[in-house]
Amino acid sequence: MTNSTEIELTKPPRSQWKDVWDQFKTHKGALLGGVVFLAIIITVFLGPYVWTIDASTIDIRARNQGSSLAHPFGTDQLGRDTLARMIAGGQTSISVGLAAMVLALFLGSMIGVMAGFFKKLDGPLMRLTDLFLALPLLPLLLVMMLLFREPLNAAFGPETGIFILIVTAIGVTSWMPTARIVRGDVLALKEREFILAARSIGTKNSKIISRHILPNVLSPILVSATLGIANAIITESALSFLGLGFPPDFPTWGRLLYDATDYLQQFPERVFWPGIAISLTVLSVNYLGDGLRDALDPRVRGR
Amino acid sequence: MLHFTIRRLTLAVPTLLFISLIIFLLLELAPGDPMAQVPLTVPPEVKEKMREALGLGQPMHIRFWKWIVQFFWIEPQVMIDWIFHTNFSEGKLRVISWQTRSPVMDIVIQRLPQTLWVVGVAYVVGILIAIPIGIYSAYRQYSVFDQVGTFVSMIGYSVPPFFSGVFVIVIFSVNLGWFPSIYDTTHVVNDWDSFVVQLNQMIMPVMVLALQITAQISRFMRASMLDNLNQDFVRTARAKGLGERVVVMVHVLRNSMIPVVTVIALGIPSIFGGAIITEQVFKVNGIGQLLIGAIQANDLPMVQTLTFMFAVLIVLFNLIADVLYGILDPRIRYD
Image (cartoon, rainbow over all chains, first blue to last red; front, side, top):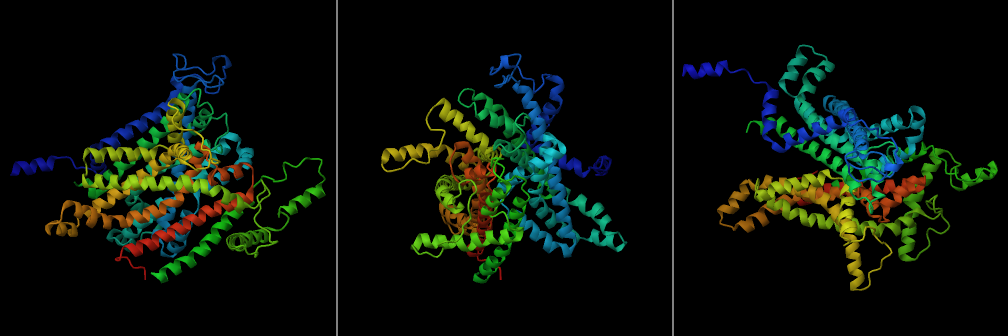
């Protein structure tokens, strides 16, 4: 009896994040998804140091080659190395995905917390959210690309300009689900005792939000972050595929797929590399999100 | 229920007006000049005349008001004239496309059947596949079938249509040569052979769209079935000695369909959006392709009308989903 309590006592205290990690580990798909996503990020961002061929070097004599030792993924119609272009394209696609996700999360959490915390803002902000949800997003994104491409090109140069435009456009049109989830959670949290306690000792609203509310809504935000990355990568690729994304000489996965469809009859394998890259990234992120949702939900974690 | 419907309908009007204003203002900022293609030799005063002929001369609010009148008042009149052979709309100015100089709605009416055929059939096929899959994976939760179903629907979520479409083109058109890769909209079905040709060209776009729809709806169906399978009324039904078939297919299924039906209604507008990409892949000249063409050609009235029509679809189907929810589930009362 005393022995067992002693063992209990000497056990190191478990932190919440260790519990989360233990639950996360039991979801094999999520673990694999996380590993694959990390591997993709590492390949894409450290790849240029290993595979040193420049993505934009044109070697017209080596055009339209199949896989070989010099060009494992072959070359395109201008003799550019497909592997190097895939790495460069992945950098853009994943950067766009991450940046757009951060923007959408920032907007969504801010609006969600505002709407949930301040009663006066709830009505107007939620009507705004409903309004955004009723907007036809893909057509509007296409229209935004059409309209703001040239002014931003002129201001920041073609690549940075389009990057800013795509990230802003995707971020501004995908914050609504996060805002709704966060608002719901904040509404419930606001009535809890620890908020009352904080208020009773005179904590300011801004401190209550940053110290007590935000850490407690972190888990829905994290889950919608993963979904946000997947959504942003697909949207960026779709825009590039419709010919309204990055300029033609600037590779992204969507753009590579779009260019490859012109040579569908002769070189069908060219379509697969970017297509598989997009699908694999999105699939791994979705599995990651699935596992995170289970791991961060204390009701599931207990079982 | 009627009160609720009417209240929602009146609320939809300002929402739609506001959305149309947003779209209008967005297009108003367009730097593209519709006169950019006019040769430099044309004198400026003629250019000014041409600009006015396109309705560009007036201030912003008047043009917005004109578009509202044209879209909500004159176009319905044209529709009535067309159906009943009256002449309410004679001599009135309609929304004119800058590309073709013909009324936008006429072109939309020409393009709509192609989209509706492909999207509509895909939606029906997707639902018909999704519902049995959802029922069976919930009934045998964590079985091999369920695991495979989860994986396939994850893939359906994750593989974007511009890849799955191109992928099936490579396999079935380029390598096997079974189906045509381009959808021929001029094809007329009048006998069995032409019907087979039509079927052949529809299979690929329909299946690509259906994969996505199936992925979403089968997940919802499964979750909804799982919610209901452990309810007390199911235990009661089993205790009464009802067969397993009746318990699942009648008691559980009917209750589980309530949220799924609303999800199906909510998904219809987003399918039209997704069809933009599928239409582009398979070269279907439906409204999605019309929108892309209009955006590239800087045809603002067309872009504005089409985008607004998508918004109308979303608002309309949100309303339908809310009302359906109330009708199907007697526990939900909005009053």
